[in-house]
Image (cartoon, rainbow over the protein chains, first blue to last red):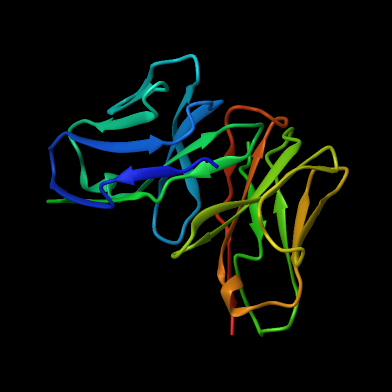
Length: 111
Length: 113
């Protein structure tokens, strides 16, 4: 059974800092990995999707890497801003559309 | 293009009642998946529908059921509600089953008293 863990559970950083969020999964036979953002009480916004054959994806200040063999992914956020404050979730899919989610990292960027 | 819509956004029900939640996918998307999010269990997969057929099912009791209509809209039903069913229910749509990227709706917040 796939298990996804995210570290740290919560993180508070001052504006402007670069930061790294970690995601690990137990079964390396994944189809793809997605990073999502969730604002309080809201749905999920897809940030980056990495296919199993890819090593990384970039979008603006975000960069996500994937190491399938070690079961790890990182989300790098450059020059953090208060608007980046949210919960970040990683999710892997082993088959079809079923996503297994991590526990999330709650990020707060302070002024 | 309109995103995934879910109705109602908020719902309060009493234990023992049943509830039906609705999800309209993005136009042209034919796969709809449902997830339950609770503080204790996080986000868990309920089921996926594609072309009016259930393609995948999570580990939830039979009180949780769903269906999909010919226009790809999906409904989820929970019978005999329990306090533990209080959660944010999210649906996600994709072009087809097995599609890489899924787009999530804003969710329905269900409170069972």
